[in-house]
Image 1 (cartoon, rainbow, N blue to C red):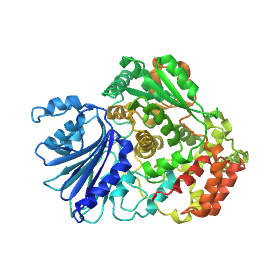
Image 2: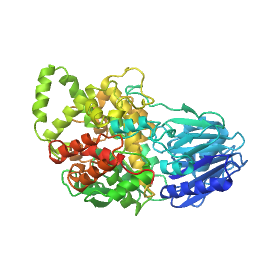
Image 3: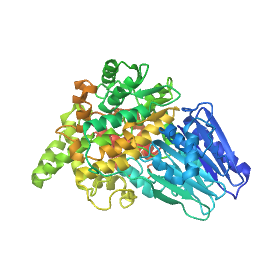
Image 4: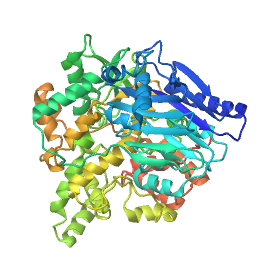
Amino acid sequence: MCGFAFLYQPGCGTDVRQARIEAAMVALRHRGPDEQRVEAGDKFVMGHARLSIVDLAASHQPMRSPDGHHLLAFNGEIYNYRELRRTLAARWHFLTQGDTEVLLAGLCLHGIDFVDQLEGMWAFVLWDMHEQTALLCRDRVGKKPLYYAARGGNRFLCASELPALRRLDEQDWVEDVDGLADYFRHGYCLPGHTTWEGVKEVLPGHWVRWRPEAPPFECPYWRLPPPGSGAAQDDDALRETLTNAVRKRLVADVEVGAFLSGGIDSSLVCALAQPLMDRPLKTYTIGFTDPAFDESRYAEAIARFLGTDHHRAPLAAWDQQRLDTLLTRHLGQPFADSSILPTALVSELAARDVKVVLSGDGADELFGGYQRYQARAILRWYTRLPSGLRKLAESALLALPEPGAHHSRSLLKKAHLFVDVARRVASETPYTAPLMFHPQAYAGLFPDLVHRGHRAAGLPEECALDDLDRMLHADALVYLPQDILVKVDRASMAHGLEARAPFLDHKVIELAMTRRAKQHLRIGCGKRWLRNAFAGCLPRDTWKRRKQGFAVPVHTWFRGELGDQLEASLTSHGGFIDVKEGRRLLAEHRAGVRDHGYRLWMLHASLSDFAA
């Protein structure tokens, strides 16, 4: 797991390119604290920051092909590299024992089609020095990041993170209004886009080819199958496939640990990993002082059940400095998921002992774990009620003050959220991703952005899927890579920690998608197939416990100092936010009328100084 940067710019001096790549490497040092190297030519420069996981003493990057024609910078892990190496050995004399040279050999011998054989997570740039062509590629679901910009016909730059990319660029960055509109709707950018004009993200499952005097050409090599694709498999197939995915992700020349929240997903990954190890698995969790949000006792119970070597750290309050660092030094654009703070804290805790952790990410999107899927199913019944009766019931419910407790602990809070979701869902056809605001509220807060925004790439043009299937499919295409995977990558790599997600093995994904969304749901809960297949792996209480997720008590934080900071920021720099409406939202929250915590967090995150 690493970071890299590349700049092609023949119109400037070698010293200018060198200064820019050195600045980019400083910005990427957290991703690769073990080694930083740079390779330069007469028109280009490429840098790599390495976190050594496999073949620790060799596999230096950027890596040149033996004939000197190609130069590779690679971020990620190829889990089946040993098998691929055996098939390539007849035509390639290997000098190292790692996955980087296997990737280089495969690309040189087979071209971009070689990525079809890869199992793992990756982002890479391959520079062809004879053809003067850059080939960029990102893994199937977007676990590893890769951004690029083509400036005119003769300047091209790419990097693992936006702050590093910005340091390569000689021109000032201007906000992309459509990207900001997407952010304020969803809390993140839509796939392929950023909040900066002309700065693009390589789409998951795509490659991009660029050559001078031509626009970048982007092409998919893998598409997420929709729910119900292929013949449904049995429980044995799921057990075997997920266990193999965990086994592959334990391959490393360093010790592997795991995140353990106490929920189903991380607990199941740990339960499958522990028997495959010759020592107690090191597990890590975060606790909150607010008991309504604290799951650490459940994690500790699972750790005792599995016999792991468990570690816990508390998160007592919000940390403005940590948030600013994550946003400006690692993300480089607004990001509204407040759980990035505890994710960074648990990553810092784990990085004291290990370089690699397993995580449970992806299970909710693939196996129907979110409560919004339950809400969508209930909506089918709810929308059949007379509209007058619905309005009466909603008005009576919303007249009651909204509790600040997590919705898993409050039926009234859950009812408030259902009404909120019902109103937002009714206005969005077809479903793309969860909305932060009802369109009417959005228009009040962001009047200049109402008709702005990008279209999500990769979603079906027509609603061939039913509403639940489309929701599951869209979440895996949009919410998963743009929120969950961004959060985990930046928070973990901020501390030089590699996170591996067995649920996002492409064979597990394709298996999960053989079932329709409704087949993953049962009354009151999701993940029906997981529950059936792995019932004996975890205590019964774990399967019964209400889903909570990695929620943060932002509702409390905004009633104190953080609320004061937001009010001051709105006054000094409201941007596209209607200041009067933003203050009204904050006042309503502080008065306890409504819990706008996560919306206020989104406003707060947008006001950071990304140019600093």
